[in-house]
Length: 472
Image 1 (cartoon, rainbow, N blue to C red):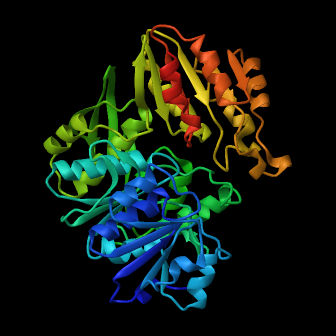
Image 2 (image 1 turned 120 degrees about the vertical axis):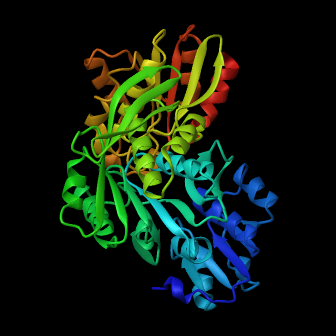
Image 3 (image 1 turned 135 degrees about the vertical axis):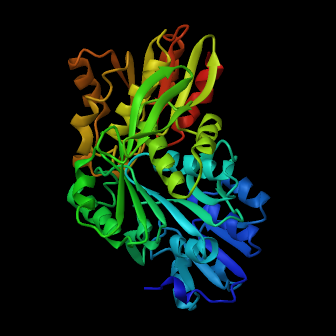
């Protein structure tokens, strides 16, 4: 297996295989900004990523072909979606080219001697990491970051700062075909955050026990010089942090935790609450992020910022001006009194918490939940029964047939029809749709003033948001 210290010292040209992914695209731009000549290839080259990369000066090849490596790049970075049979992967090995994974490249070219703030967990990574990045920016610490979403305050998902900190979203997905470990094991964080541990990513993990082993290994490798900020209401986290050498600070609602949330009040558009540190009042904060899960995300970020010496007054101002992440409770438009919201939720816990969070901020109308099961996990029947209990706070529910079911073995496929039947059995007003056009037609004739349409999917959902707004 190639390790990061085998990346040659005199790198000038870099080629990225599968460059149009969110993380790989960000890395390509970072390398370009650092002065390297960068090329990339992908099977699906299309806007907006393709045009963005080209605008940054990254030369892109459409499709994978051994000839794309004919110029002999000094280094090839291999995305985790690339299989060893990929013609470019085969060529780089045959030609003896230097190659590495995305985390290895990040460590070498971006992290270098910076201190890492690493955000891990099944839920809340993107939002928590982006809050940390914005607090550090407002504190004048000029951070670098790579995060799995578009940060509204920065207009992108990466940044090369001159300061001493880099904020990274710690992905538990595997690293590359030549390194099946989770990406986050490659990093040695100064401060780590662990938000939650649940079963997800059924294409990578066998079961919950497998997930626990991976996260347990990560916690176990943290050094005594690190600080782990961990959610306090998760029995699996309790188990994973017990007896570990790393210093652990817990955050959440429990009075025994070092960082405790209390005195919550919702005053739209503000989510207001106190945070106590070791039992003493630390500060009162307000954010436009909705819901309990976002209060927890904020608390984790506050704890991390405090460890880095940021004052409570700077943190307060940063939270008030934090603009969120695209596709995380993002209001896409309001037409004729109907609010259309886009959210990335797909795991049952995320769907439940998102609905729970949005509901109090729109008390005057109905909350209409629209859900597309699209991930490798949600298209499987693993959570078939779990999904039936997560829509209870919605007034009306629309469930789409999974769009990519052919990828899943027939005996493992999720059934949207069964979910709707189960929801109706729970006395929910629920409907099944075989395609997105039918959902738009239904909503156009159903919604009324003050309704909120909460659309949840980890994919583009056939541009349902803009198309629905046009119809309205």
